[in-house]
Amino acid sequence: MKRRGSAFLFALAVASPVHAEPPVTLAFVGDVMLDGAPGATIRAGSDPFARVAAELASVDAAIANLECAVATTGAPVDKIYTFRAEPAVVPVLARHFASVSLANNHTGDYGPKALLETMALLDAASIPYFGAGRDLRAAHRALVIERRGVRIALLGYDEFLPRAFAAGSSWPGVAWSEDEDVVADIRAARAQGADIVIPFMHWGWEYEPKPSLRQRELARRMIDAGADAVVGSHPHVTQTAEYYRGRPVIYSLGNFVFDGFEAPETRTGWILELELRKTGATGFRTKVVHLDTDGSPALDPDAPSPCGEHGVVVPCATLGASPTAAPAAPRPG
Figure 1 (cartoon, rainbow, N blue to C red):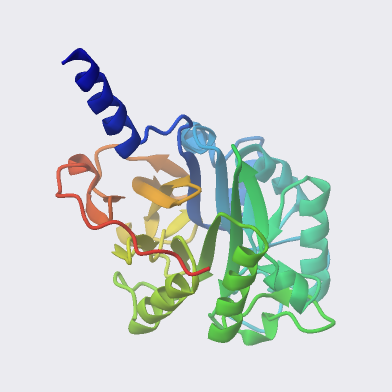
Figure 2: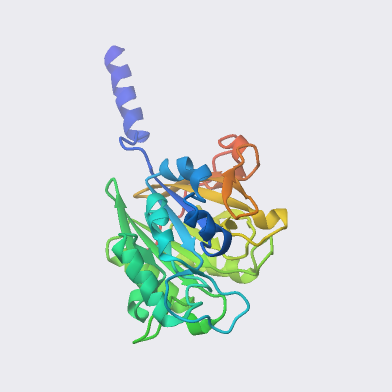
């Protein structure tokens, strides 16, 4: 009986593998605009991220959408709002973020020269970026970061006007969200050895609390092409989260550091903590932040927000209480 029991325990261990390594955790935050009051906070010697620094430091890598140029050069383009932060903000970004997305509708606010300066400043501070580049090829190239042997490809796309900010064959700009290009980039990142592929989208209608049909259809197309998770920003409010084929889609993280908003929903954002293994995303949770009048966030530990585990989205307070969903569908090659 003793030998049979040992054999049973061995078989159970084989059938239910235990991960030796903890999952890799990434934190994504939404729109970070460091002109205006946030820039003044930094000039005064303070840190607009100070009250969320512990959360950003608790993960393997934190990623933000940088919603402004960072430069001293260039001139504002003809649009309602233009944002250009001072180079002094770069060390603050480097303190908290492993990389930033530049795929948004404000990266080009001061023209190509300022965008080139932005990228040069980030390069000098060793802050990798994605979603923009010195030409079309560079803008669409995945940024691959590796943590504990897991290779994670980050792709960034903008689909909010002006389209004039898009990179071209010989000029700098953002990666514009053309469906065929997005699908090709996801497949290329997978073919080049990425274990995980995550598009970080700048999409959706401003101030809409639910994703548009366009967002939902594109999210599905990206996952069908091989994306392991889809993350979004731009609407200035948080949107919903869901699973498709066992993979999470968090449609909008809302504002993170941004002044000039008054409505409570525009001064509420999420920190997305995404758990990853080589096999895919194993779960996520969102943490709520509220922005003060200067656009600086503080954590609200009691506010409800969505979490996901085993393909099920539930409130964070009841994570694990829902029935286990079917396993994720196999990823395309």
